[in-house]
Image 1 (cartoon, rainbow, N blue to C red):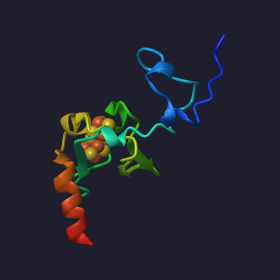
Image 2 (image 1 turned 90 degrees about the horizontal axis):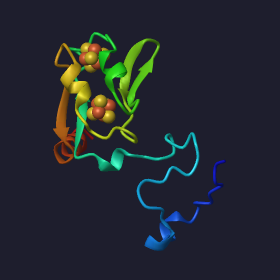
Image 3 (image 1 turned 180 degrees about the horizontal axis):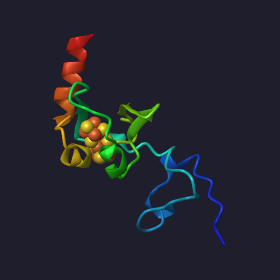
Length: 111
Ligand code: SF4
Ligand code: SF4
């Protein structure tokens, strides 16, 4: 029997209200829980090298490879934890892991 949780005020919880270890208050909450803030590096796609083989899509543990019409459409940075698996498995070296600082700086320079 699952316990019904009310975690709307979770940011105000002190240590006394948290269960030891991880708490998953109910099923289907992974989408709401943005794990992108854990990241120190992010994958950056080189569209010229990518042939949409989707190996990275199957390997990503966070379902953060976005696909549209059978093509790689980008990275869901709200959930990507920056583990680097996509860059490791890519047979075409189309994913490069960059530090968050460097990636953000490069983004700013483009705008
Ligand atoms: S770095 Fe890890 S979490 Fe992020 S897209 Fe690549 S495999 Fe997924
Ligand atoms: S594994 Fe590499 S080539 Fe294949 S879809 Fe991913 S980024 Fe593109």
